[in-house]
Image 1: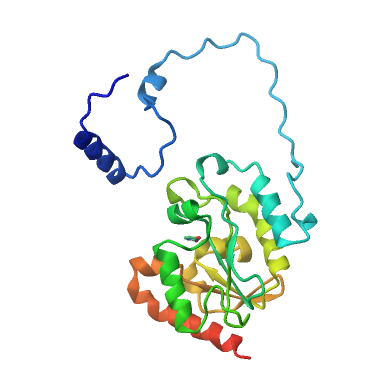
Image 2: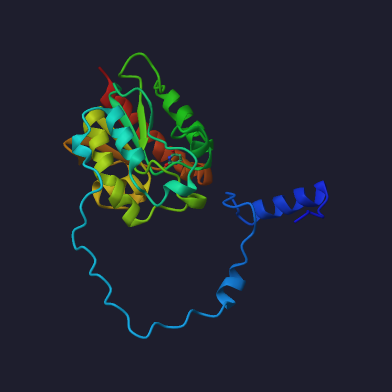
Length: 252
Ligand code: URA
Protein backbone atom coordinates (compact mmCIF):
# COMPACT_ATOMS: atom_id res chain seq x y z
CA UNK A 1 0.00 0.00 0.00
CA UNK A 2 1.31 3.44 -0.98
CA UNK A 3 1.98 5.62 2.10
CA UNK A 4 0.25 9.01 2.07
CA UNK A 5 2.30 10.31 5.05
CA UNK A 6 4.70 13.16 4.48
CA UNK A 7 8.22 12.85 5.81
CA UNK A 8 7.42 15.13 8.77
CA UNK A 9 4.22 13.21 9.59
CA UNK A 10 6.12 9.92 9.51
CA UNK A 11 8.79 11.43 11.79
CA UNK A 12 6.10 12.66 14.22
CA UNK A 13 4.46 9.23 14.22
CA UNK A 14 7.81 7.59 14.98
CA UNK A 15 8.52 10.06 17.81
CA UNK A 16 5.10 9.34 19.29
CA UNK A 17 5.78 5.59 19.22
CA UNK A 18 9.13 6.07 20.97
CA UNK A 19 7.41 8.20 23.63
CA UNK A 20 4.83 5.44 24.09
CA UNK A 21 7.66 3.02 24.87
CA UNK A 22 8.14 1.27 21.52
CA UNK A 23 11.74 0.14 21.45
CA UNK A 24 11.90 -2.47 18.70
CA UNK A 25 10.44 -2.89 15.23
CA UNK A 26 9.39 -6.51 14.87
CA UNK A 27 7.48 -6.38 11.60
CA UNK A 28 7.11 -4.14 8.54
CA UNK A 29 3.31 -3.95 8.72
CA UNK A 30 1.24 -3.12 11.85
CA UNK A 31 -0.83 -5.91 13.38
CA UNK A 32 -4.36 -5.08 14.55
CA UNK A 33 -4.52 -7.16 17.74
CA UNK A 34 -8.07 -5.92 18.44
CA UNK A 35 -9.27 -7.32 15.11
CA UNK A 36 -7.56 -10.60 15.97
CA UNK A 37 -9.38 -10.84 19.29
CA UNK A 38 -12.74 -10.01 17.58
CA UNK A 39 -12.29 -12.81 15.03
CA UNK A 40 -14.71 -15.72 15.62
CA UNK A 41 -13.14 -18.50 17.65
CA UNK A 42 -12.53 -21.77 15.87
CA UNK A 43 -15.29 -24.35 16.38
CA UNK A 44 -14.48 -26.56 19.34
CA UNK A 45 -13.33 -30.01 18.44
CA UNK A 46 -15.91 -32.67 19.32
CA UNK A 47 -13.50 -35.09 20.84
CA UNK A 48 -9.97 -34.15 21.72
CA UNK A 49 -7.10 -36.49 22.12
CA UNK A 50 -5.71 -36.20 25.67
CA UNK A 51 -2.92 -33.66 25.86
CA UNK A 52 0.45 -35.31 26.32
CA UNK A 53 1.77 -35.11 29.87
CA UNK A 54 4.61 -32.60 30.18
CA UNK A 55 7.91 -34.26 30.74
CA UNK A 56 8.50 -33.84 34.50
CA UNK A 57 12.25 -33.51 34.03
CA UNK A 58 13.03 -32.14 30.59
CA UNK A 59 16.46 -33.13 29.38
CA UNK A 60 18.93 -30.23 29.63
CA UNK A 61 19.42 -28.64 26.21
CA UNK A 62 23.16 -28.42 26.74
CA UNK A 63 25.60 -29.28 29.49
CA UNK A 64 27.61 -26.19 30.49
CA UNK A 65 30.04 -28.52 32.30
CA UNK A 66 31.08 -29.82 28.88
CA UNK A 67 32.49 -26.39 27.96
CA UNK A 68 36.22 -26.50 28.66
CA UNK A 69 36.95 -22.92 27.63
CA UNK A 70 35.16 -19.57 27.66
CA UNK A 71 34.95 -19.69 23.87
CA UNK A 72 33.22 -23.08 24.01
CA UNK A 73 30.83 -21.82 26.68
CA UNK A 74 29.97 -18.76 24.58
CA UNK A 75 29.31 -20.95 21.55
CA UNK A 76 27.09 -23.27 23.59
CA UNK A 77 25.11 -20.40 25.11
CA UNK A 78 24.57 -18.67 21.80
CA UNK A 79 23.19 -21.89 20.32
CA UNK A 80 20.67 -22.44 23.16
CA UNK A 81 17.07 -22.18 21.98
CA UNK A 82 16.21 -19.25 24.27
CA UNK A 83 12.82 -17.57 23.73
CA UNK A 84 14.65 -14.24 24.10
CA UNK A 85 16.82 -14.87 21.07
CA UNK A 86 14.43 -13.99 18.21
CA UNK A 87 13.74 -10.47 19.53
CA UNK A 88 17.38 -9.68 20.36
CA UNK A 89 19.95 -8.33 17.93
CA UNK A 90 23.26 -9.51 19.38
CA UNK A 91 24.51 -12.18 21.73
CA UNK A 92 26.29 -10.50 24.66
CA UNK A 93 28.79 -12.73 26.43
CA UNK A 94 31.45 -10.72 28.27
CA UNK A 95 33.94 -7.89 28.12
CA UNK A 96 37.24 -7.02 29.77
CA UNK A 97 39.99 -9.46 30.66
CA UNK A 98 39.14 -13.04 31.69
CA UNK A 99 42.42 -13.06 33.67
CA UNK A 100 41.19 -10.23 35.91
CA UNK A 101 41.04 -10.89 39.65
CA UNK A 102 37.65 -9.19 39.77
CA UNK A 103 34.56 -10.36 37.87
CA UNK A 104 31.40 -8.25 37.68
CA UNK A 105 28.01 -9.79 37.05
CA UNK A 106 25.04 -7.74 35.91
CA UNK A 107 21.53 -8.59 34.85
CA UNK A 108 21.11 -8.63 31.08
CA UNK A 109 21.98 -6.54 28.04
CA UNK A 110 19.97 -3.39 27.45
CA UNK A 111 19.37 -1.55 24.18
CA UNK A 112 22.96 -0.31 23.72
CA UNK A 113 24.54 -3.63 24.70
CA UNK A 114 22.17 -5.43 22.31
CA UNK A 115 23.41 -3.15 19.52
CA UNK A 116 27.11 -3.46 20.33
CA UNK A 117 27.31 -7.03 21.59
CA UNK A 118 29.23 -5.97 24.73
CA UNK A 119 27.96 -5.73 28.32
CA UNK A 120 27.60 -2.40 30.14
CA UNK A 121 28.24 0.03 27.29
CA UNK A 122 25.17 2.28 27.72
CA UNK A 123 24.74 5.10 30.24
CA UNK A 124 24.84 2.71 33.20
CA UNK A 125 27.96 1.07 31.78
CA UNK A 126 29.67 4.42 31.33
CA UNK A 127 28.94 5.26 34.96
CA UNK A 128 30.31 1.86 35.95
CA UNK A 129 33.54 2.58 34.02
CA UNK A 130 33.91 5.94 35.81
CA UNK A 131 33.31 4.32 39.20
CA UNK A 132 35.89 1.62 38.49
CA UNK A 133 38.37 4.21 37.22
CA UNK A 134 38.07 5.96 40.60
CA UNK A 135 39.67 2.89 42.22
CA UNK A 136 42.20 2.41 39.41
CA UNK A 137 40.36 -0.36 37.55
CA UNK A 138 39.86 -0.46 33.78
CA UNK A 139 38.35 -3.18 31.61
CA UNK A 140 41.54 -3.94 29.71
CA UNK A 141 44.19 -2.94 32.23
CA UNK A 142 47.33 -5.05 31.64
CA UNK A 143 47.64 -5.82 35.38
CA UNK A 144 45.02 -8.50 36.31
CA UNK A 145 44.72 -6.80 39.71
CA UNK A 146 43.53 -3.60 38.03
CA UNK A 147 41.53 -5.18 35.21
CA UNK A 148 37.96 -6.45 35.33
CA UNK A 149 35.95 -9.12 33.57
CA UNK A 150 32.28 -8.27 33.03
CA UNK A 151 29.32 -10.51 32.18
CA UNK A 152 25.59 -10.76 32.77
CA UNK A 153 23.31 -13.51 34.01
CA UNK A 154 21.42 -13.38 30.68
CA UNK A 155 23.24 -13.05 27.36
CA UNK A 156 20.17 -11.80 25.44
CA UNK A 157 18.26 -8.55 25.91
CA UNK A 158 14.76 -9.09 27.36
CA UNK A 159 12.21 -7.21 25.21
CA UNK A 160 11.86 -3.55 26.26
CA UNK A 161 14.47 -4.16 29.00
CA UNK A 162 11.98 -5.89 31.28
CA UNK A 163 13.30 -7.71 34.35
CA UNK A 164 14.23 -11.29 33.47
CA UNK A 165 11.67 -13.88 34.52
CA UNK A 166 12.56 -16.61 37.06
CA UNK A 167 12.43 -19.15 34.19
CA UNK A 168 14.89 -17.12 32.11
CA UNK A 169 17.22 -16.81 35.09
CA UNK A 170 16.92 -20.54 35.83
CA UNK A 171 17.74 -21.37 32.22
CA UNK A 172 20.96 -19.37 32.19
CA UNK A 173 22.09 -19.87 35.79
CA UNK A 174 24.08 -23.10 35.14
CA UNK A 175 25.88 -21.25 32.34
CA UNK A 176 26.63 -18.24 34.56
CA UNK A 177 28.06 -20.60 37.19
CA UNK A 178 30.24 -22.29 34.58
CA UNK A 179 31.27 -18.86 33.33
CA UNK A 180 32.50 -17.97 36.81
CA UNK A 181 34.26 -21.33 37.14
CA UNK A 182 36.09 -20.95 33.83
CA UNK A 183 37.07 -17.30 34.37
CA UNK A 184 38.17 -18.20 37.92
CA UNK A 185 38.31 -14.69 39.39
CA UNK A 186 39.22 -14.06 43.04
CA UNK A 187 36.25 -11.78 43.79
CA UNK A 188 32.78 -11.18 42.44
CA UNK A 189 30.85 -7.92 42.37
CA UNK A 190 27.11 -8.52 41.92
CA UNK A 191 25.31 -5.55 40.37
CA UNK A 192 21.71 -5.29 41.54
CA UNK A 193 19.00 -7.79 42.38
CA UNK A 194 19.11 -10.15 39.42
CA UNK A 195 22.61 -11.59 39.97
CA UNK A 196 21.89 -11.72 43.73
CA UNK A 197 18.66 -13.63 43.14
CA UNK A 198 20.40 -15.97 40.71
CA UNK A 199 23.64 -16.60 42.61
CA UNK A 200 22.67 -16.06 46.27
CA UNK A 201 19.02 -17.08 46.00
CA UNK A 202 18.05 -13.73 47.58
CA UNK A 203 17.05 -10.32 46.38
CA UNK A 204 16.69 -7.09 48.40
CA UNK A 205 19.79 -5.22 47.31
CA UNK A 206 19.40 -2.47 49.90
CA UNK A 207 20.00 -5.01 52.66
CA UNK A 208 22.39 -7.26 50.80
CA UNK A 209 24.78 -4.60 49.54
CA UNK A 210 28.00 -3.99 51.37
CA UNK A 211 28.09 -7.46 52.95
CA UNK A 212 30.30 -10.22 51.62
CA UNK A 213 28.67 -13.48 50.59
CA UNK A 214 30.01 -16.63 48.97
CA UNK A 215 29.38 -17.93 45.45
CA UNK A 216 31.09 -21.17 44.46
CA UNK A 217 33.61 -20.61 47.24
CA UNK A 218 34.43 -17.07 46.07
CA UNK A 219 33.84 -13.89 48.07
CA UNK A 220 30.98 -12.01 46.39
CA UNK A 221 29.90 -8.46 47.17
CA UNK A 222 26.40 -7.27 46.20
CA UNK A 223 26.16 -3.62 45.30
CA UNK A 224 23.68 -1.26 43.66
CA UNK A 225 23.25 -1.51 39.91
CA UNK A 226 24.66 1.59 38.16
CA UNK A 227 21.26 2.12 36.47
CA UNK A 228 19.81 2.51 39.97
CA UNK A 229 22.53 5.04 40.78
CA UNK A 230 21.55 7.08 37.73
CA UNK A 231 18.03 7.32 39.13
CA UNK A 232 19.13 7.69 42.78
CA UNK A 233 22.42 9.61 42.87
CA UNK A 234 22.28 9.78 46.69
CA UNK A 235 23.00 6.03 46.77
CA UNK A 236 26.44 6.65 45.24
CA UNK A 237 27.74 7.12 48.77
CA UNK A 238 27.07 3.48 49.63
CA UNK A 239 28.39 2.35 46.25
CA UNK A 240 31.60 4.18 46.94
CA UNK A 241 31.97 2.31 50.22
CA UNK A 242 31.46 -0.97 48.30
CA UNK A 243 34.09 0.00 45.75
CA UNK A 244 36.55 0.79 48.52
CA UNK A 245 35.86 -2.64 50.02
CA UNK A 246 36.70 -4.22 46.63
CA UNK A 247 39.77 -2.05 46.27
CA UNK A 248 41.04 -3.14 49.70
CA UNK A 249 40.64 -6.81 48.74
CA UNK A 250 42.54 -6.24 45.51
CA UNK A 251 45.56 -4.78 47.26
CA UNK A 252 48.56 -7.00 46.40
N1 URA B 1 22.56 -3.59 32.70
C1 URA B 1 23.07 -4.80 32.97
O1 URA B 1 22.75 -5.40 33.98
N2 URA B 1 23.94 -5.31 32.10
C2 URA B 1 24.33 -4.69 31.00
O2 URA B 1 25.14 -5.22 30.24
C3 URA B 1 23.78 -3.41 30.75
C4 URA B 1 22.90 -2.88 31.61
